[in-house]
Image (cartoon, rainbow, N blue to C red; front, side, top):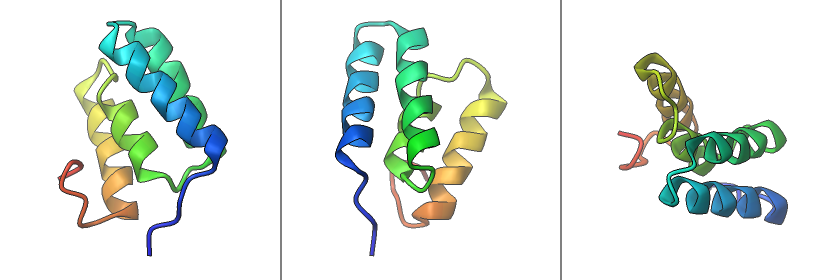
Length: 77
């Protein structure tokens, strides 16, 4: 069973998505990073963070963390 992230973490993820859609990757990274620090077992936060990381190795690391948490996650695969 996948554990739900706390409301605060969900809000940070949503803020990260909004920032990313607006093209503000620095703000998006800050929000997603905060979400992963507050709830490191939230695959959704790791996937979001992967989408705004500037270095391919960092993207890969985030996606690997997400897959370790949710091996069947199609988005992370």
